[in-house]
Length: 344
Picture 1 (tube, one colour):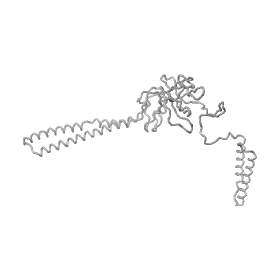
Picture 2 (cartoon, helix red, strand yellow; picture 1 turned 60 degrees about the horizontal axis):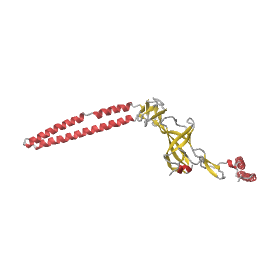
Picture 3 (cartoon, one colour; picture 1 turned 135 degrees about the horizontal axis):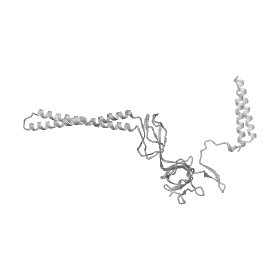
Picture 4 (cartoon, one colour; picture 1 turned 30 degrees about the vertical axis):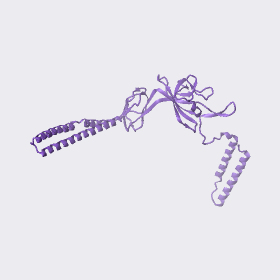
């Protein structure tokens, strides 16, 4: 109940008495009184209490959660929650910001706004002169076959000599030491051939690493789509992660809504629901429900769901607002064919 004016005046008088007691105590202790500040506090409190008697409903309660519905009176006179509008903004299902892959200078941009790109197409390049030089050196080392061929030739000659010595040894024309020396030579040359192959493998691995390093200077489109924005200039010195190009796939759009909990058991995944589209579409749209979050928000009493809108004709832009249609009673969602959505 609002505080009466008489109670306000009585409280003000008590505060004035307390203020006078503070003033006298300060005077006794030889401390400079702060009577003016105390009086200002009393006057402010009195003004607040006076306002509360005139407009008690205008004082907001802090800490209350914000909800997307307002209470209304039904015909029976009881307050029930009525949600305002089930609205969302339509966005591309696939859109991405392509950023700088590494610190450096932007060398080229291969596309313009409005261009169609293929998945994997290079759309921008960072300066890669050093990376290209390293790759060229690694390619030469990886393609060197001379050490392997030399080792193979030496091993082949050693094997022939060993066979000859063994034949002479059987005829008792060669000593045991000569045969042992020939066998050791073959083993040593086999090890050299193995080492040459290992060096070649290391060189090939380095070449692949340098190739990957060079690839890191390229910006490729992760999917087929349309370039909708270019944020950087050629020749700019950029940091990793800065935006270069915005890309979207306009063929499929989506509308993400946070619906009231009262609709949770009334939705059917895979069902097609009706939406009213705002400008510039200004008409009805069909959208398929593809996702319903299994976690609800108890604070806002809502849950998240996603509807997919087919746009293969590319007649719909992104960014327009839609409203999910409800029945005449405002509690049922309208499905295509005048059916009402509900989970089995």
